[in-house]
Every structure is written in structure tokens, then in C-alpha cells.
Length: 364
Image (cartoon, rainbow, N blue to C red):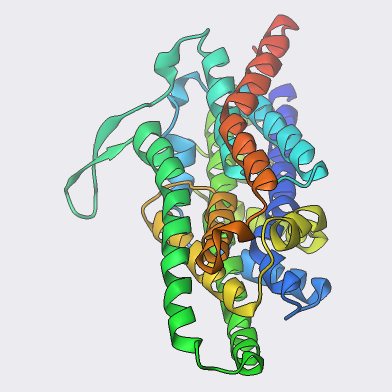
């Protein structure tokens, strides 16, 4: 029964991370629509919460990558998942406190990699760096692993966000150059309601799946340690002999993320909407459409990219389309350093937590 109790604790911790992801990354979906005063903060968080919930139920490709495509599950225990999630929560809370839009996705990934290495007794082979896999739908051989699904998108998605937003903003400037400012603000103010909803949905579609994958991994790992014959009938639904994303996992993660989104992330909203660059409805529309589209494409491809990176670089792109001096480069530098250290920092925290748990005899 001890293993079952700890499994329930781990599942609650995963949902706790999902909750922090909601209020930490809620700002990514609503910062622009709040800063342009199209919606009040309360209206924006309600919109984002609903859109996040619907988006979280939209697919499982990213969940499968996170849960079964980055580390060797033979070395993963529920203790591994626990340490990975605690590391991610710590990083989310620290960066949220200082108002820095870091990546919850990379915090989760770093925590899982660090805890997995500790579980495997420092063997780096536990990390699935690169491997071939046959797509069951098309029969084609595709490349999977951390390098293809995490590292390459981690570099390319922010670049794509900046460049695409810069181009879209340039095109919009050309279209509206003879418009009266009042009409530009009115039209794109209305359009931003759609783009903000799109961004909220895409955030749920991308980030909601990541914790679903972790929860499914925890349930699968628990099969090795829990004596399911002794488990009460009303808890039998926790038993998953193979890795799969159950319907109740989708719903619990979606509801939890929506709840976290409703709490809001006002510190980060202030950073993205005011400190990074001053924006108007037309800029918000371009940035949200760009960031959401990148998340949508990556989600279909099973790439757990960062919502934060996508929208932040999109905001930078629309700002630079006006003039490069529009950016607050002090905050840009601070954000870039945070991005650089997120995976190593959370991996280190998770590794130490796993080592302490093993030293205390709790990882058995």
C-alpha cells in the first residue's frame, strides 16, 4: 500500500506542476490582449482558461514524446517522476516570482532528464538522444529522441517566432499604412479576440499534453512496484500495464491547467506586455497568430516546444518590425539567460533530489 500511496502523491505533484504551468504560462496567452487593453485581466483569464482546457484535449502526440520518447522507461520509477516534477515546480515558482517568462516545458524536460540519469546510476544511455522509429500510420521511418524532438525545435522555434512575426508585421504595416489609426486599433482590437483565443487554445494543446505524458509515465512505472491485487476496486483505474494516455488523464490535466490559468500570472504579463516592448492591437494580433501557429504545427509533429519561447520571440519580432530600438534589451538579455539555464538547472535540481531520496533509502 505504501507504493500506491506514493503513486497518488506523485500524481498530485504532477497536477501541481500542471497548475503552476497554468498560472506561469497563462501570461503567454493573455499578456498581449491585456496590455493592449482589449480585455480586462479578469476577462482575459476566463477566455484563456476555457481555451486552455479545450486545447489540452486536442491530441496526444506531444504526450507520447514526453512520456515515452525521451528516456528509457525501464529505468524510470515513480520516485523519478516525483523528483522531476518537484524540480520543475521549484523553477516555475522562482522564475514566476521574479516575473521572468521562462519555459515550463523545458523545466519539465530538464527535470525528467536529470532524475532519469540519477535513476540509471549516472548512465547517460538512459537518455534517448536519437533513434529511428517507423510511423504506424504512414510506414515511413522517422527520427525520434531528445535531439530531434527537443534540441532542434528549442533552437528553431524561437528563431521562427521572431522571423515570421517580423515578416507578418511588415506585411500588416504595408496594408494599413494609409488607414487612420483609430480604424487600425478598432479592427485589430476585434481581431485580437480571435488571436488571443487561438493562442490560449494552442497553449493548452502544446503544454497540456506534456504533463499528460508525465502522468502516463508515472502510472506505467507504478506497475513495477504496486501490488494491484491488494488495491481497492475503486482505484483499479490507476493500473495501466502499458504506456497509454487514458481519458481521465486528459481531463484531469486539462481541468487543472484551466484552474491554474484562471489564477493568472500578472508578474509575467507585466514583463511581456510592458517591459519587453510597447505594443498595440495590431502587434498583439501578429504576435499571437505567429506564436499559436508555431505551437500548433509543433504539437502535430509531437515536438514539446516552449510556449514561452514562441510568444516572447514573436513579440520581439513585431517590436523590431517597428524599430529595433523598441526592444528593452536589458530584459531580452535576462530572458535569454533564463532560457539557456532552464534545462541544466532543473536537471541539476532533479538529480540532487533523486540522489537525496536514494541516500535516504526511499527509492526502492
